[in-house]
Image: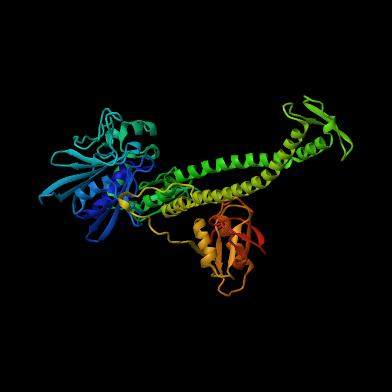
Length: 557
């Protein structure tokens, strides 16, 4: 990730052009290490997103509305108290570092104007967002408090004087002279150790330049004039690899380049599509762990139940021993631990173990009693095995939805579903706030022939789609014996075509556990043949009269 000093400089320029003299109207905290500022400007309202998360620290504008907790955190309330109504009077970069400072004029409780500064330190695992009182130079608070136990050299705690991170023994890229840069051996590692504010990718780029100083000078001039073209480099699967405002030769030609009108658009695209920093994946981690742990327990339970069932089913010898012992009680000698009798069913001699503590008749009774228990156990184990299998099928489907989820809303819906089905505990809501009522919003696609295809994002939506939304003559699809979404094709009286079946089946295969496989079997049938058994878990249905096609997963173009 290349959020280096050069990107910081470009972002400062974008901030200056957009929110200078703007007014902060609202502050939100979607996650523990994230803030969103609603800022009113002459050109309209904008949303500034800031993250101090170690895996994806950044600062840029966003357009989407992020989901906020029902009750704001203490830090969020503090930010609102000090920043709401504040006017932005200056935006700057600290030297050539990954530090952006936003100075504000706000009113205190007595109505007097006071100066405060928001400092965004975009430094990997050391990233932070700090609010400083400029009158005293002391920290009001920081999104991540750093005590002396964590860092002896630099603490970030309310009431302490704010100090910048220790300066590195490097020449800032904005201040380096041609002579100083030309005196450095043209080697990427040496550039990285001598020039401040550049990333490894930029250092490798400078190594290839005939005139590295000239390349830096032109880039800084373009940033100052707002003439750069922010871009993201992606691999063949469109997974982002790098982003920058500088052309990086090592990626040009070797990767696909996507250009953007603004740096914020490039950063939004990069982080939304980068698997390691995707918000949905980060938020689903605890759910994935919980569901996986529950599945491991169920797999073990299924194995043990299967073993117990096998033993119970092989209990005919118990009945036989009891029957033969009853017929041959006269042959048992007192105190014997076994007896050999003739099995009159096949003419063979059978050795029956005996308990010396009991009489022959009581030994026979014990065998009949154990046989009766085994027969009862067969029925009970079969029921338990069916229930365990249903639990496994359900949780495997949830795990598939978690892996395929692409937004935080889908993750929250799955969490709510797991709470309702008893697999997770309900989170306590601060301030007595209630959870928002669930509203289904299935994915929607249009086929080449104009048919509308609806896809459930979780089991609750599957039930709503299949049992409430779909008409009885609509087409229902699902991967065969593979966890996946219910897919509904709204027919609206039109004829079923082969093209429609294959396109809809490809969508069903894509929204399943077999997304990355080939030749996936998909069942399809009219909705009127799909039923939900009484007491079945969400999304679990049975169907008849189905047909099957094999298809590669694919979404409509």
